[in-house]
Image (cartoon, rainbow, N blue to C red; front, side, top):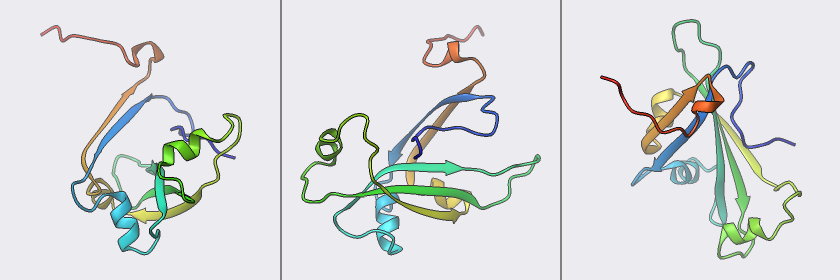
Length: 129
């Protein structure tokens, strides 16, 4: 079993990420176009990883898409909410290697925050100059 949570070997920095879906050609559309998913399947998670870099990035990046079948549910949220909280969610994993620019092209905007201090996560701050 796995947990949908970011981590690395040492996790020296932690934070969060947010992304806006692309107007056209987002993750679901790309997966459908490439034949990885069909109608009735829904992307419920994306795991994006970059391997060891030693001062220079080299493609590919590693992307796993977590997919569930909607199984007649009108609302995927309702389908997941109907499961007991302690029960793992059954997903299908589609793993692909991609060029970094191709991954970011799946989104309109993408933001990542990182900090070595857990006390900074979610904190309001202001600039001193």
